[in-house]
Image (cartoon, rainbow, N blue to C red; front, side, top):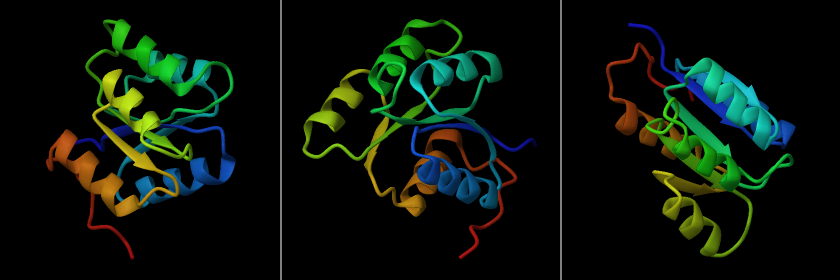
Length: 132
């Protein structure tokens, strides 16, 4: 079975590269975007199995992107995990209200992300055990 494809959308290059490398190391295929508009376009074009979406990005917020993903027939059922460095409970509440299935504060705990992706996407991927 083919590796599950994850779209990682974050404007912070370090976070983007770190999450991408960790996901690849866990057996996922990764596509990336560095702003909100690009994230929506990549999701439309590449049909990822899940999206890791920073909610504070240029080109429109990640929350705007989440609304657009949910409004599009092509992407409305793709699981979205929101991530953010914004403090307090409001970012999580807003992301979940708009259709994110999970929310993680930055810095992101990759083990929790991997576990959540496995739960959301099923364990039928060819993903090897995570490398420590």
